[in-house]
Image (cartoon, rainbow, N blue to C red):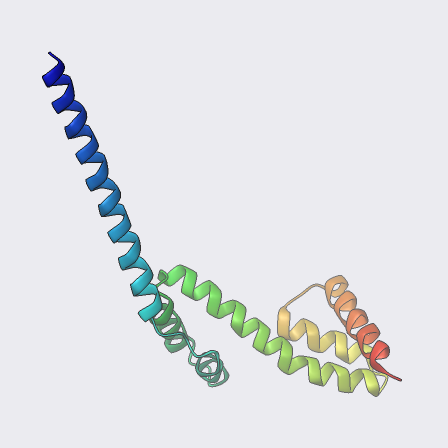
Length: 135
């Protein structure tokens, strides 16, 4: 009887060790694949977005990150929004320097599609940020 218990325990130990070994090898393979994956060029993605080549930007993002198409579409849309905001921010600053707050609000709304209250808050925040930078 004790020999049977010993063999059973030995088989359980070997099974556990094999499982740990397999998990370790899988983790090593994942880490190696992650290191080998090239990084997406933000500049390349932004250039495609500036040229209104949205589908190509999504394909590029998906190819380099390995995410599904829906996640890629969301990420590229967020990047496009950030790009539009950064482009519009310079124009909004110019309008604020000219004292044309209404046009700055309008510019923000055109870029973001935001309601008036959100646009007003964003332009006022930009106005305060710009005022804080002055000597």
